[in-house]
Image (cartoon, helix red, strand yellow):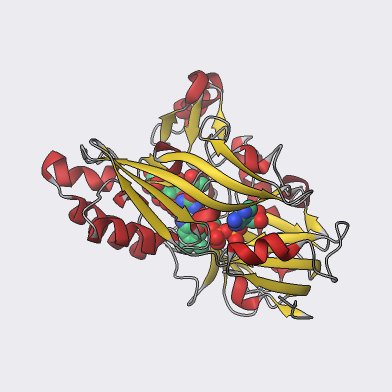
Amino acid sequence: MQPTTPFPLKPFNTFGLDVHARSGVILSSEHELDALRQNAWWSDSMPRLLIGEGSNILFTTDFDGLVIINRLKGITVQETEDSWLLHVAAGENWHQLIQWTLQHQMPGMENLALIPGTVGAAPVQNIGAYGVEFCQFCTYVDTWHFADGHRERYSAEQCQFGYRDSVFKHALHDQVIITAVGLQIPKQWKPVVAYGPLKVLGDNGSAEQIFDTVCTLRQSKLPEPSVLGNAGSFFKNPVVSAIQANELKNTYPMMPCFEAPDGQRKLAAGWLIEQAGLKGFSLGAAGVHREQALVLVNLGQASAAEILALAKYVADVVRQKFAIQLEPEVRFMGASGEINSLRAIQ
Ligand code: FAD
Ligand code: EPU
């Protein structure tokens, strides 16, 4: 395993930014993982970054370190009386996994169709869409530790999953490579159709119908990264106190507002951005997507600075109008590792 130096990152970030890493390797087997720390070129002190498909990353500059592209592959299945238990290598593509489960008559994860990226990144931000989250299926996450190369399995509980959150963004941030995940799909299938546009399917909709509807919905709203660079929702949906939500609701009765844990309320950042008049707005080659205001797009040859300037502008306008601070969902990478995204747009 020999690193490529310099390593072009354009094919590995869905924003399509033309940036480079000092070096990079493609990790394609567990055997290479065991040997990783023995390489002459390895150094514990060099900045390093794990990348799946780069669909939740904004490179703010070139990366002055080693990137490791995860392409570990393989799916194994065990059947119990009431469930299918999957062990899936972290470099598998998430959407292809969903298709595979449906082809093998294991319905359950269809609401999560067409989310870009790898299986190994799914636990990092506990991916979710259309009323379903990754954590509902996760039984464990297998990891390899940079510090000493030991392997450790974390139970779903230890992963501390939350809304777009997990232990991999906190105590285990930059500490591990996720190598595989364990998933449990109950045989007793129940459709999840509470999300607005899925309601028409009712309780009689099949898993395939939900899959098709989710794919059609997503294709109508979310830009295809190969056509228009983007990293999905740029900001998280803000979670605010019930008091603040009620005050806003009095002024804006049409504002979407959802229950959140601990009596709080989740607001729709896309709605706030649209109401602030920014849908379709652009600064240089960075734009707010015309079909979904929560997505910032690369309209051509945008630089990271242009995307950052637009993100800052959007957050400023929303703060002035609604007194709400938007927080990026996308992970910002600096020259030697992740940087504080909130600070970067303030
Ligand atoms: P990357 O972008 O490569 O990495 C993301 C972060 O995870 C980085 O910090 C990276 O270091 C870390 N990481 C990645 N792999 C590993 C690993 N094996 N071990 C340790 N750390 C790792 N997300 C949703 O939740 N719901 C959606 O509906 C959704 N829709 C999207 C639509 C579009 C068009 C796009 C472009 C993105 C969307 N996203 C969505 C965001 C993105 O798809 C997810 O965050 C996805 O899980 C990222 O996968 P990735 O392999 O590209 O991760
Ligand atoms: N809305 C607007 N204008 C917009 C966008 C949205 O008014 O431009 C309104 C919608 O009409 C709706 C509400 O805002 O009432 C919510 O919109 P939507 O259902 O499209 O979802 P979202 O909150 O914008 C979230 C996730 C998506 C996920 C969808 C579907 C976050 C940050 N984003 O988006 O995830 O696919 O729900 O479940 O939670 C991602 O994480 O990258 C991502 C795409």
